[in-house]
Image 1 (cartoon, rainbow, N blue to C red):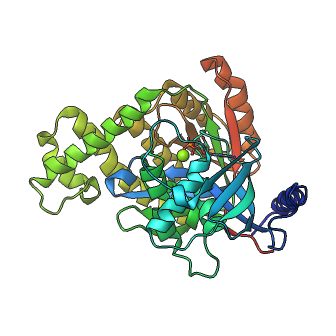
Image 2: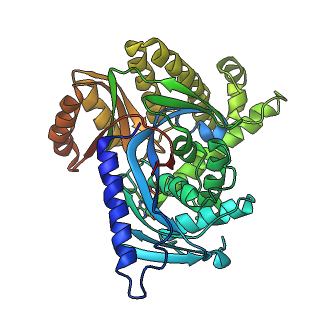
Image 3: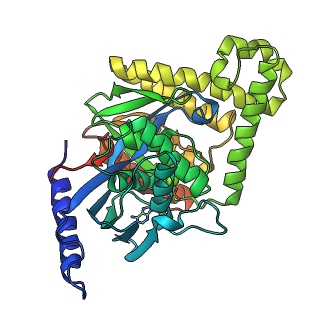
Length: 404
Ligand code: ADP
Ligand code: MG
């Protein structure tokens, strides 16, 4: 389902691309080819934090904040793309795609990396010129990068060739981010952007790369609050330390339990039997992961049955575990959750994403969103000295091409 606002936006973007083509000094280079339009959403994770990198389960939703690309395919093995937000046109050639690099990558490399990963996977790709625009804030934790990659995967694809499944395409885009951009991330972001569905969350099995849709009760909105707390390089190293602690835990337990390859294979009873084998910090991290997988499943059940009280308890337990056991929360995230807890109409609230800053996600009764927006805007700056950003969003469809 596409909104009227979405259609208006699409028409504007296409008109702008058409005007650009006509105003070129050399005349319209690709005027004969029709303008096409693809979109890909950002995402927010409802529950299941750091479980993806332990081959467990996550429960994100694609959201109605999205990246759009209007484009005209052409015969050259090249992409020329203008980002409206950055007011910048960059290009790359398919002949010069290489994952080896030093230093920072420009934004166009998210598209080049996707082209590289598609070609590596044996998919035919085609050049285009186009315009990109987005309503996903950059670096807020709503995964603008995955949305850029997924939109690019639609624009680059040869429309005559069969398209891989959303999960297969997500793996390809993840490879672009991991191997080409050099950014470590699990499969969740690309998967949610590829396979989301309006009004639904997506339960992803991160070992099998399979998903199923879970309806979000129609009475609920999603509200994302960005702490706007500065992040530093420590965060990236802490992320890697957490991953290593989890892997060590899985290995130590696996020495006694032959079926264990990852913490995904450990249930609470098994963990309790072997807790004494683990260094204290490792035991804490493992306890979080093992229980968080259970909370993901319980949240799916609570969404299906509309048990709002259970959602509140599960989100609270997840947040407390990330704060006390996994130790990736921050003062600012805790304050946002504390503010939300006192707001009428807020059903559930927790930190979301890798932590150390970033965002919280709250489930809020429709009509009560402004209560939370106002409470956060009023109380958060006084308690932190920071200005928050708040987004009221709804679960949206995954990436795809818009009908002409
Ligand atoms: P996020 O959490 O939003 O995914 P990342 O740092 O992973 O943050 O990705 C953000 C990057 O994605 C930007 O630095 C830029 O390279 C690219 N990007 C996102 N939105 C746009 C846009 N509208 N135009 C150009 N590049 C974009
Ligand atoms: Mg990103």
